[in-house]
Amino acid sequence: MKRLINLQPPRISAVLLALLPFLLVFFVYVSYSSERLAANPNDKLLPAISSFGAAIERMAFEPSKRSGELLWWVDTASSLRRLSIGVGISAVIGLVIGIGLGALPLLGVGLSPFVASLSLIPPMAVLPILFICFGLGELSRWC
Image (cartoon, rainbow, N blue to C red; front, side, top):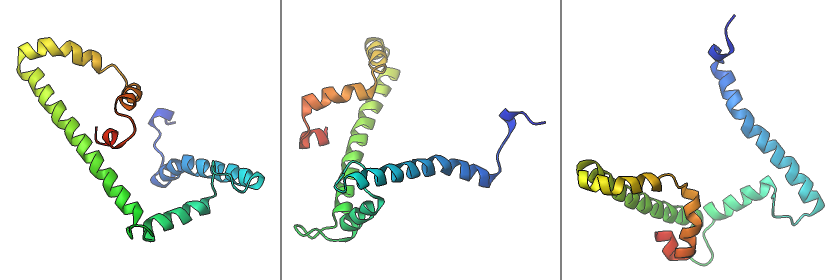
């Protein structure tokens, strides 16, 4: 008899087990959405699945009346550009500080305790401080 810790499901069972939580969330969403929409047809908290399809069709495949662009793709390109700029800046700063801390003992002695204590702060705790400092405008998107 195999122990439970050594039991490996067949590939098809593994795929079905991986899909199970997604299907469960989908069915729960659909049931609660239909309940809320039956009580209030204008409810925007849990919209119907069909409204998702309509919104995707409108944003991705129909040109904007104002600019003539496909908004889904323009917004996605803008977000990816901002994300790559932020990751690039963070990578350069981390690389410069990391190489400096590892290569120069004097710098390592001075900054290692600060970096070690700073690394204990969860990034999500820093976000409200950044929002207060930079606001929610264009500067916060670049910083």
